Length: 304
Image (cartoon, rainbow, N blue to C red; front, side, top):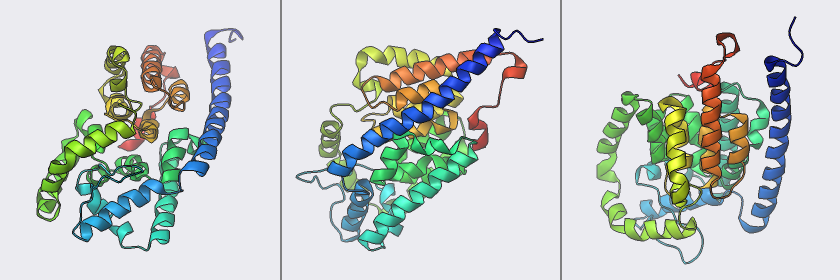
């Protein structure tokens, strides 16, 4: 007979409490975020920013033109190619299409990873979907095995195959970059990068939510990354270590997310990503020490 107060019983009660609290926390934080965005930022703002940059390039202008007000477009030239289908659409239709496809892609990847659908309320994901940032396509594309397209959408998507030592998508991406280089404004990008980089730093408040923005926490984040292991770190590297990390970057962890870490990531304050990766490292250690019959395959298994 199982001891009703034994470790398995305690773990089961803990699991029920966590999985009841997590969706409630997501809904509360997402509601607060959306109420703020609705009064300050037009829906689909980032998607239109990327589309406008692509239209300027097609017209022979400067995609990295620094606006007097508002956000800055800072993506490398391949992202312009990824945005071409949306540049071909009228503005309103492009906005609706970006948001609609983002929602569909998010539903697909959550189902593909066997997560409950309430993960659609994960605040970083809600943030990215509202502003229609192309980032929301990165994880679905990576999970679907379309790594080169994901890297063209957002260059930091390359950290996943790189850390997982999957060279094929990186080689294909390098080939695509070489083939498309003659038609893309690489020279202008490098010429404009110092000004764009400075604008991005100012826009993110000096460093965003990355551990790089809080030097005292960086050693802790590095230790947690080592404990976490290379395969899982592949999904954590961008939200924790990428310069100028935005809140929506944290949706990168969906394939390997744990409940407690997700609670931390749902809180957009400096240091939250470091707290989250520490919690994920603790969960990883607990998983490794669990009895074989208590282990379950990590969500990342669904990305093969």
